[in-house]
Image (cartoon, rainbow, N blue to C red; front, side, top):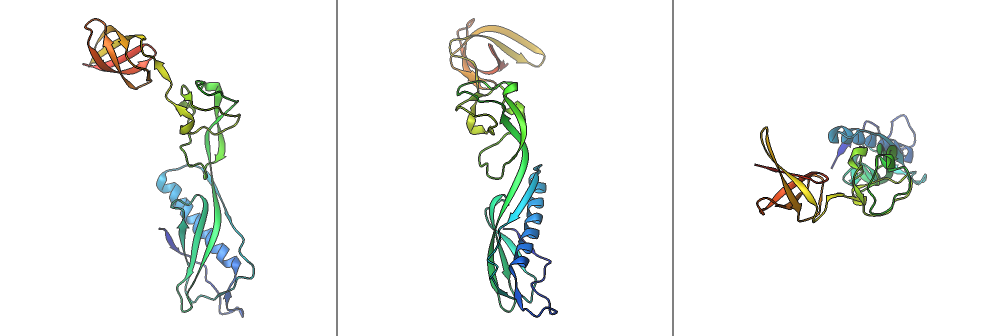
Length: 233
């Protein structure tokens, strides 16, 4: 849990009204979230710009003036993104706690569709592009490079300008069961090629069972391209 001792004083002796007003609680929350989000982005090495919107509090709220600096902690969730709740606490002679809701939006360049795409289609370069989107509420893995999507197979239909995530895709099969393939066996700079038959479907870089048609042996090989597999000698 992140805790920060805020630099805002809850009140001033020069003020006649010995209470903590909602505007101060909002200011404390704003400052705390700015610090916390900056720290999160630096620690996680995440690029992007953020916006913080602190919800308005009941203007009738009046808390006793605190004789110590207020502290703030992130009540929920674990990461300072999306809908968050900040606990602002006074640990002075008259202790109190207020929970302040806020919204943290994080904008990143992510992969989106450029047109409607059909289920089971293979994603082509012209099907996707990077656009800035608020990813704070995207719980499933978004993509930050179009190369992560190109060549993948869609498992569901998508509309234009939709963010593509990992749940929308699966590895496209470049080798199918029964295909004739070329088996390349490598050892250092030496390579030997032989004919084979795929005994299973396989996507790029996946391992599948292949029959060596010269020796009739069944081996495991890695798919390197359509009609091509490779084993290490």
